[in-house]
Image (cartoon, rainbow, N blue to C red; front, top):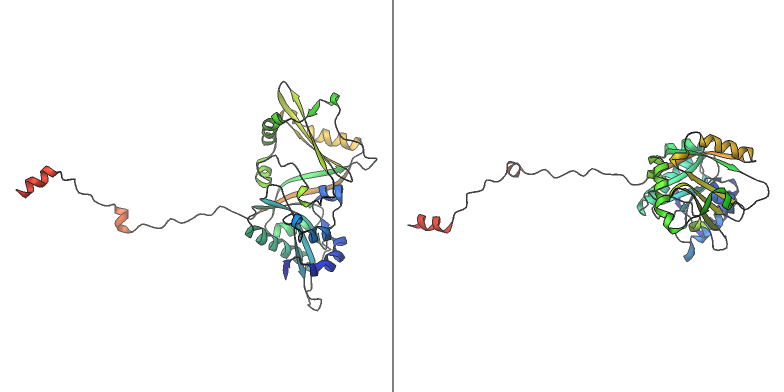
Length: 311
């Protein structure tokens, strides 16, 4: 039976966390969070709402015994969450596959009852994980490649000669316009209408340091590109948004340039979403036959007409 994590599940999560499949590479690569630490923090005032851990701990005597957990991390908008870990990882058995589906179904019910509108996941495309998510109502809204540079870490801050300058408050409307103009509608619908910059604050304990730097490239008063750099304990995560004027073969050229510079592909992921709310058609109560025909009204009678009738 799937239920909310309790302190009685500490040993189970500790044993299985090394077998967990991670579905949030940003947080995993930059900070390596431990699922058990995040689960225990759910019982602390500062950690409430940051993550949600669901546990399946069937009795070992059961023929189809399954033990595992799912952990989802809240997003700053308060309306969505990311699936962070599912344990154990898929191993080809039908029992584990069914376990994943059960955990995802229970997560949908729980988050929907708490008022969240959507659940997001970044799922590796090289296995059966996509099938498990599809079977529980998730759909693919985009895809992405993640590349990593594993040599000595250098500061990714762009130099003034690169054409980028620090983001200012007055740039916010132009950057938001750039985002809307370059981001496909399915992505905006899945991730929300805001710029959707990644912010790990909700799931990181206070001792996990991080900071963010933002830059824009401008020409003739128009923002052509936006650069977002997330600095973590174990590396830096770069996200760039390029304007319509730089479209065409820019994706292929950028990938080729990164690979030539020593970046290696870490993962190819399907960006998936499940909406926990949907538009509902509400039936209008049918009017009675008398009201449907309308109400006949008599012509108004003036006071003079009343006097004439009285005479």
